[in-house]
Length: 525
Picture 1 (cartoon, rainbow, N blue to C red):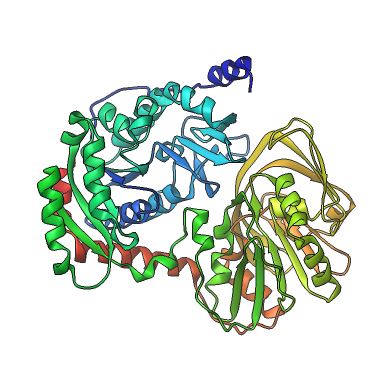
Picture 2: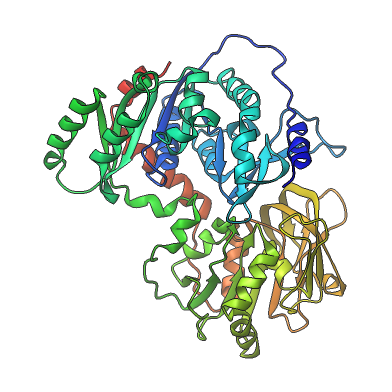
């Protein structure tokens, strides 16, 4: 990226500050981690639901998130469209889940900066729900200081409407070499004057070193801001670790605030990080076998959570280096932030050969969003939106082609699938336009009652290959049940949305049982 490109990116950093800067209504508490994947997102979700159940107006906040799992969120800064539909942006799916835990609609202000990785060294930068541009990491490192006013303004907006704001840090709070440009850990805590609680994952080991090491690395001002620490994911007899807690407190002066024991219901909530896909899944004896290639820049992989939750479904993520098994019923190509790069990966791994052999055997293939684009004849990126400009042959299983553009479609869907009469809910979130004769055979006909039914997606002439841009499709119980019945699965009666709600309530109960929530609330200011 050249210097003029950087200047252009910086020139796009625009936001509308609050009309009135009244006094902050909410108290706030920040949860930082000793590393990534210590459970910050889940703990914040549990606290959001627990305090909301106590009658408090609670809001989640994470200044910067790095994830390709995104959700559509409301944008209160923009007027509704001509059809009256509210303006939309996007935020990290973890913050959308936390908003759900608070029983409120997700807002772009809950996650004002979202980084969506596209390469090993670069990401798409989303500011307040809108794409700012693509940026190499070294450039973003220098420019993100310019984002602090927008980040603080979003935080203050939430604080103005709530009793309590629960703030989540990112990665490790002790990455002191990043502090000068930090917008999401200690520098943000200082700017917003937030008390900090450190969270450490004892299941991975090294908790004493992680907490004491964090203390050693922080400067005096940041150390004083830490109100204490929590231990997460503990199994067994905690009395055996109590001497360790005494040592941590002696070394740091930080009080021990409690231990959250292992939460067995974690797999009932959407995972934030694609690292979760690399962990071995529980064995399933489901009759319907579904294979999902593990793409490099996989996005919105929680689309498949409802299928994985079905008792008669055996859903397997196929890791690079492994072939797609020949005994599966369906291959699903999920979403991604780098469609052409994923096509290269699919060919490198030989998965294209496996998929074609699967189709010849009478198997089915489904593409979701970028996966839909991959099923076509070609994917063109003339502007270099997702990487170097150019085009890549698709898998040729659908008679469509796609051109990536900088116009991003963000919309929520609540309609009826005219093919089966089932209610379909979800959202579209993609850059690119798909055309071709295959669209004359749409997978879905969506009818929201406001006009002519809208065709969505495409189906091959033999009905074995289909794709669509709609995320969240399989979250609809009736639609999912009808689709699985076609494949020979037993009807389960699974209410997936109820399952998520029950999991959030159980997580809140877990927080109530394990932590002194009154003491934690007293720390907020």
